[in-house]
Image (cartoon, rainbow, N blue to C red):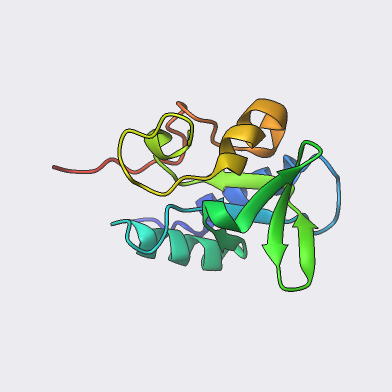
Length: 131
């Protein structure tokens, strides 16, 4: 048995290194489908452990090809988006069912793709569901 802290430390450092604006403390968000998702507890735990902000699609917006987090103090630029959202939830233009989606996510994918660590279709950082 080995501890996982080294893996998560490397993940945090890698995501910080991906920030386009090389700031000492980049804003990294973990994008989740929300509390009704079966893996929401994992998303919340991971975001807290890594020190990232846990967000849903409605918490983000894109303006002038920059992703922003909506906060009470106004819009804050986001440097890196760690997507923990199934691919089917990412495109609001072709919804297969009545699930919530974010138009900013599709816009981000097209116009600001470098801000997303786990791009749509990559399956990066995904946990397999057992059926």
